[in-house]
Length: 128
Image (cartoon, rainbow, N blue to C red; front, side, top):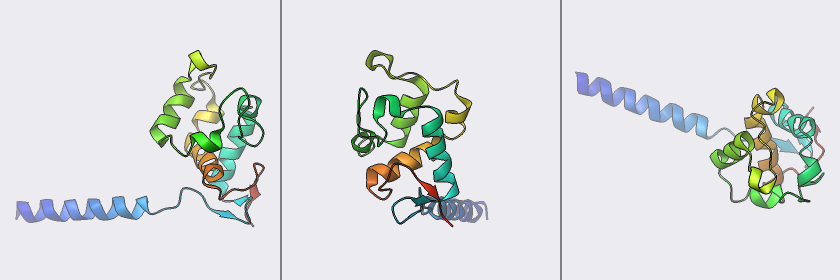
């Protein structure tokens, strides 16, 4: 009976992990209308003034193009970079920024949408 219970728990866990893994990272319509969570990521981008180094369109200036970097960075690497910074390259840590840290998943979603080409304009607006 214990073995059966463990198998059932394992199967249920697998089902829930798969169900949540299938949720989209972002939703975009017409290239610039995004879901509420992705919009929070855009607002965090603006509040942190990331455009000063990465460009208004994430194309890169002093800092690298995030459109290109998000093609190869994992989410964990992105979170580590934003949280810890890369001081040797001029990237500050944002771990004390409440706006950035409370919206880091949303910021990743926004930038990933830009990198994937789904969000075609850097300035987004809410979906209606």
